[in-house]
Length: 67
Image (cartoon, rainbow, N blue to C red):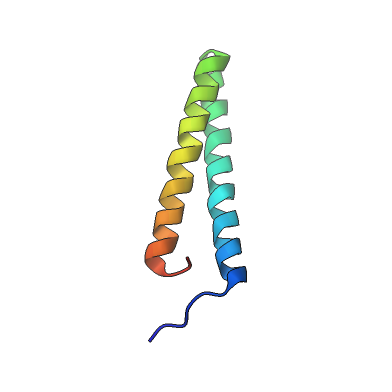
């Protein structure tokens, strides 16, 4: 029987998910601006990337048992 995660483990897992989302958003913003996209397009793509990656990492952490 696996040991349930502590509160500290859950908080760290959520922080890791947020950091992955922020990194993905920054990369998406820089790539969009590099390829001559407008600021609005860059913000839209970075927001979508943040949501997608943070949700994916959170789902993976749930399946592994960190949350």
